[in-house]
Amino acid sequence: MTFSVSSSNLFSHLQAVSKVINSKNSLPILNDVLFMIEGNNLTLIASDQETIIRCTIDLIESDGDIVLAIPAKNLLDSLKEISSQPISFNIDPSTLEVTIRYQNGQFNFMAANGDEFPQMKELTDPLGSLTITAPALLKGITSTIFASADDEIRPVMNGVVLDISTDSVTFVASDTHKLVRLTNTAFHGQGMDEGTSTMLIVRKKPSQVLKSILTGDGDVNIVYDEKRIHFQYGEYIMSSLLIEGRFPKYNSVIPTNNPFTIWIDRLSFLSALKRVSLCSDESNNLVKFDIADNVLKITAQNPDFSTSAEESVTCQYDMDPIAIGFKASFLVDILSNLSTTDVVMKLADSARAGLFLPSENEENQDLLMLLMPMMIKA
Image (cartoon, rainbow, N blue to C red; front, side, top):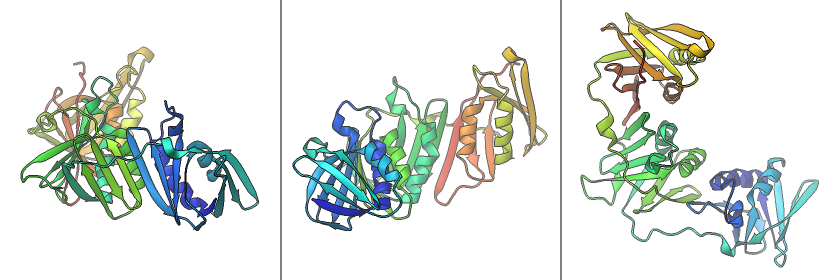
């Protein structure tokens, strides 16, 4: 049995679906990508048992149908070194030996029977659905995922929350030190009772996979039940188990009265922060801010190595002086994931959370980032 396909088309789609494959698997077949050839279509499927993704691409030609599992790493490594060109797969149905021929060469490897490969389960009793544009979903994921945790004790903190209501969709992530919330009022849940909402916790890996495939325009159709969520975008369909458990009431930890507002150039602030933090104490990465008279002074010191650093950045602030400390690496993450020229800081005192906001939100969006302070010595 033979089929032909564009090497670049196969490589890009194979690279996307293989992102769900774990580096170590208890089942050997999960190291493979399932190839399903039907007519002139090739469907690629990859899974880690919690998440499964499939996509369909067009073949140049095919002389039959077959299902087999091909080692993902071997195939990706081989295709990476082949220039864009038509390549042909020759498969011996009795031995499942695969020969891939390309201009001036070929390589061979063994495939496996695909009958034992996990199949995508349909949602039998969907609770609701959401249709959102790919750019909006991508913005929601990229703005929040960096704030998610890797916490074995509290797994509910290890993903991106989709809080879907009948008038908006809100993306949330938190590791208890930092929290990001992005509300988009241009999209809303469907199939829900008016005034209700559903909170879904999407695992980190499928969220990362979505970041890699949401490369264009078009709509993403999302359907979910109590345990699983399905995403459909273009030629891709992905299904993943949700993280079970109750996410904390995130709005209750966001301060509503931080009276001190500071406007500052984001890139100047970020650059100064990175430089000064090089001299921070390695045990806590603490940097201190002293803000007064339109100047934000950043200081850090490491007593163990007798090093210190200080730098001042111009800002807009003419209220009472305030001092506060933050973990530098967390604040670098926050500033790096804001995109506006200026950033707005809203502070209360040295013990209460600081808010970091874009100077201007995109249409229908409200982005807020929160960071807990660190104790500073008087």
